[in-house]
Length: 267
Image (spheres, rainbow, N blue to C red):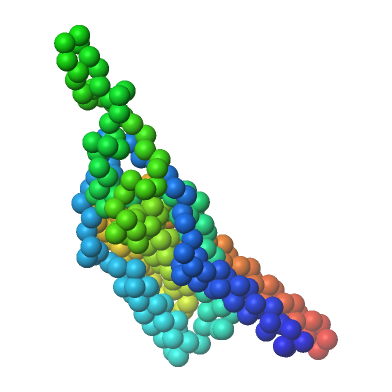
């Protein structure tokens, strides 16, 4: 029975992790969304050195989560393997949903046209872009051609253009707000952090918010991408934290029932 129960707990993690690895390392094409040539929201500069790269975001939250959980386990023994299992399961679910949104929507990042660098004269202007006054032709400055061809961009930047189609929703925001919300709920339920709980919770929220805002200032995401990513992370964290609260309540109720039965038996 223990082996079966262990398989039931580990199998979902393996499946979720495998799916996430496939999405990240197997060359899957996102939805090929087109663009308007005059769309200035896609012409922001490309910043190669991000404020918080993906690996740094991952390390920050792994370190903070590890310190919080290990400290609680050593000093208060309030952490169980179920807590870690629940947190990892929820995190993998959050990452999977975020990746599905990225590849399904294919929203272009604010620096897409900077990387694409199409030949505007050949790609963006055709006969409809000009009008004649009877003597000569003039360019219509209000003309907006929608370009949906995939071969109009610089092929030498194909790996960067792949990432430039994954704006919605922000992985940094969903990951950061999931970890922050889960830990905020975690320290609230732990007696170890009772005196400094508000301070820790505020720091976690501010850190997640700052990491998310850097994606806007680095021109990798739009505010809407950040909001949707944050809501996704918070939603998954609350759901998996709620499961812990329900299990704790059930355990407490069972314990009280056992105590009541013991008193009745003694009487």
